Image 1 (tube, rainbow, N blue to C red):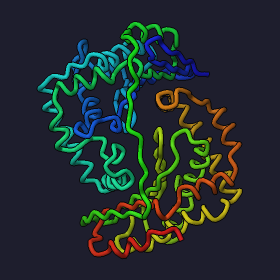
Image 2: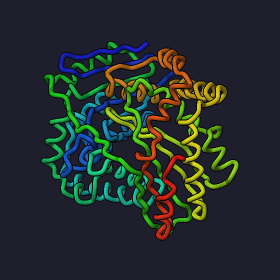
Image 3: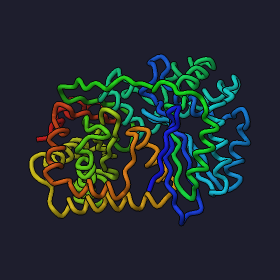
Image 4: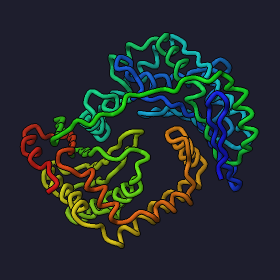
Length: 421
């Protein structure tokens, strides 16, 4: 089972010992991400994440990388809407040294002016890269439709203007204000001694208790279908379709996951079979879920033959509409449940996946489920629950569709397809 501990200053530690492995995955999670930022500082969470790898009080940029990679480990970081995470996977004998490196990055970043200016160029090139990838940029356009003029509707990376505006003083203030014990979770999985890790964490993160970071809640103000077409001379049309959906801890969250699996999570799914296998309308087709503290998104993504966009959309909406009119079959319901459990079971054999599973859960919900608990909850889900979820989220008035492709003259025709029948 897990071992969980909360220090007097609010920092939380969660570990899972896995005796049959030689590795340890360690993550430092901070409850700060793009939805916590002021509009004038869009992208500062992501930019700060980049800069922490440029050196700390005890470790230079080169030494950070060589210390981890030199013993066969790997290190990385990521920024999302609600979190920033710094992580390593390393042979278990080097856990304490890895903790020392990550914690010094988090607590004592150098933030050298020269590094800041160089990294602005790097981040702006990253921004350009995403803009040049239609399968990526179409999701940014969809977010703008879902949450116009709200933090969740703006890109995590920021804009050219906001990134260029970030100063060393801004970064130092942001780090000191938000990278505090009450907003930090230490998550570790693998061949690990919880007591030793907790002792080291307590010594390193000895700052007093601080206030929790806060964010602005998401507003859903939509009352009619929305379409955004970005004309571009691409070889195929890239589609992102989204519906406002359930928040992270909603009672029907497992039913929503089963619905996602049935519709588009694998090659056995309805959309894959109907859109690709039977009709050849798209190469890539699938569904996805985004889960946040107070809201969520049900996504459909596809790469469509430019000549068949209208036909493909009509078929996708038809398949979505079916799930709100009748129960899914017993057979596909069982297969979806088994797929859910099987995928989670396989993922949790890996120390990194286990660390991410625990860290996100503690950071978001202050609790973590065992595989057995998930299976128990899944067994209580009924087909009627999937029908209820479909009725809640698949509504014409909350359709949001973003398209990138050579569609300059098709927008009016495509808007007429935005209905679930």
